Amino acid sequence: MALDVALVNPILSRDSEMSLGLLYVAEAAERAGHRVRVLDTAFTRSPAHLWPALERFAPDVVGFTLMSVTYPQTLRLAREVKRRFGAKVVMGGPHATLYPLEVASDEWVDAAVVGDGDLSFPRLLDQIEHRQSAALPGVAHRLSGELRFDPEVPRVADLDSLPFPDRSRYDTVDAYIAAMGHSYLFGRRVLTMITSRGCPWDCSYCQPVLDHIHGKKVRIRSTDNVVSELEWLKQRHGIDGIWFCDDTFTFDSRWVTELCRKMSDRRLGLGWSCNSRVDTVSPELLAVMAEAGCEQLRFGMESGSQILLDRTMNKRTTVSECEQAFAWAKQAGIKTWAYTMVGGLDETRDTVGETRRMLEKLAPEHIQITMLAPLPKTYFAEKIHEHKSLRVLPHGFDDRTDLGGVRQGHGVRFAAHCTTDGFVRHSPAAGVNHGHGLALVLVIVASAATAAGSTAPVSVAPAVATIRKGVRPFAMSLSVCKARAATFIRRCLSRGTVRMITSSKPIILNALCVE
Ligand code: B12
Ligand code: SF4
Image (cartoon, rainbow, N blue to C red):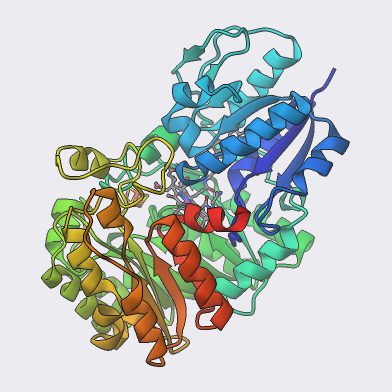
């Protein structure tokens, strides 16, 4: 007898990218003979519609995809699922991978799946169906009441063997297409795709998390398999744009060249964008990519300071490689997007200045500035543990500690540099999204001090004052404690002073949506 399996994307903010991981496990469950429904809370921003949908479907199992930032809100949903339907609750994705025992021990959760769910989820469903409770590789579960965990994680060796993830499982697919076109490739109908799993680099703010999820060995799909999925998506959803959300799409230049040739030969007519490292591109490669429709390249520039790149981030790239890569992309006619981070342990006023000057020099079409956050189980978080005055983001975030990575006192001083004073008034380039001539204001206030137990008075006043002076930011990046953020965001949105708010801590926004 097949099981009824509901899979939930529990994002309570309007994310413009769907979880592909959830679709991959949906395909795996269906292949194993179960009936599957995918439910999404991203666009309704509230779980209210989940309950009637689940009532109708009456699932035996409800699976959630989990990131560290969504853990508390997802647990609340899990509790409701248990209370209302008594279904088995399974968690998978990054946070379940990092904390399988803790997640599976929660009273509302029955199992946590580690790493690739494609192989282990169907095995778990098989056990649930047949009321068995043996230990399963890559799964922590309490199917017999007792916690069992076999840490041997099964990985999919040949990604071509997986079915294409059916995006229409999301009834929100058209909303995603519209949202992605708007935020990534203006005017196009865009969907996301992933062509590889795994990353060999060791950036301190990211690893060994990715290693736990997908491994260090990069597994790449064949170019034929990728082109077939592109054609399928075009035909099925009428897309004319694609966002390859791989960590480093340009990892293997020969593979990229082959894929680009095939995309050009088949006249796919897709405009596309991808993530890249500055040390993996060459003028030749970029020319081939541009020819095949690449319109935008997003580089992990991270910082203009070599000290930060080396000491804090272990990025293994240089400032000059970065300058070269941006210049080559421009020569090839590809628009650039600079991912940058501020607030690392070695950050000072001078290093922020280096980043600012670098952004002015590179003049990317899009600048994304985020707060360097010590995500759980990263090397960066470990390093912070060594500093007695710092706190690390705990297992499951807490609004009192969301900026635990910022040095006591330093956070407050830093706020002064990075609020509108530092970035907008003194440095138009760093604050401006060049493509649109709109300002981006970075606000880093409040919770750094709160987290470190300081009573120093910090406020969002500098940002508010700048807005009053007539700067109308396009986007605002926030790293403030939840209560302050709530008031601040509401004020900005109600006055129409800002059109988009990003945050290094999406849970702030998520929390806002459910409160
Ligand atoms: C694309 C992407 C996004 C997209 C889409 C997110 C999504 N839900 O997939 C967007 C832009 C929205 C996004 C946002 C963020 N992201 Co992101 N993102 C990625 C990225 C680059 C690829 C994701 C992907 O498609 N992977 C491929 C699929 C096949 O793998 P997967 O999703 O992990 O799913 C597999 C398994 O995890 C498992 N699985 C997943 N779900 C489930 C559910 C069940 C029931 C089961 C059984 C199994 C299972 O099986 C799947 C198939 O094998 C990853 C890095 C990476 N390489 O994975 C980071 C990553 C997931 N993101 C990360 C972060 C930190 C964020 C943000 C917090 C960033 C920020 N500061 O704003 C936000 C959080 C958004 C939110 N509100 O939750 C971290 C998560 C770390 C953590 N501890 O949680 C990662 C790992 C990057 C990193 N190395 O730090 N992200
Ligand atoms: S930041 Fe990018 S390159 Fe560095 S380890 Fe993470 S995915 Fe790999």
